[in-house]
Image (tube, rainbow, N blue to C red; front, top):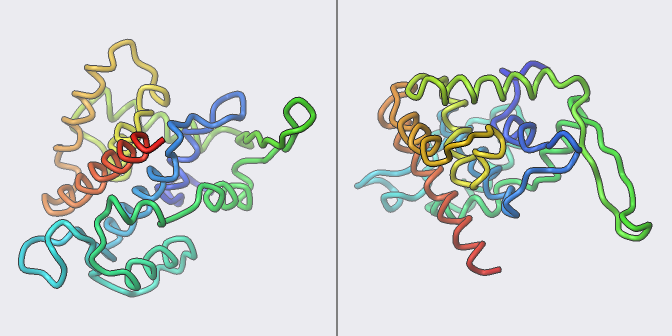
Length: 221
């Protein structure tokens, strides 16, 4: 499976797998994955973030097309939004997708393998490893290139940068000695010309709401 055929959530998960088989995690990876699913549905024209005067309140999720996408993960997420119209993205990211579902897809596609073990002989744990690493290397290369350029990126890479920043993991996935500069570049990238103004705004709203959801979840620990 080539990286251009992977969902945003799958690309995100790939770069969150560390070399030791564990996951980079802020503890709220599922919220980032939820944002990735919403972003994929926006890019594919199925949903949007409503403006003023629409069928739902401004800033809420609105369905633009209920046509299935022939992908179980995206179609299930779309149906959830159809069943619960007018939700805020910061609420929807909680129930868009489970981390295990994304890992199961990557495993079924033979992109990653799962190795199960017991810590101290008692507690079950799972390590994840990419099969040949090319998919992960491709996504990382796109992320690094986008951050190097600052304003030019394909839509999916720009979204991944925003979601990783919102989840507090961008500096771990793309190591840097200057996190402040990296954040500034990521913000600049979000305002690039990689999509229409309307689409960029909707995707920025989702990324911002992922950041809000992560902060709220962290405060409740």
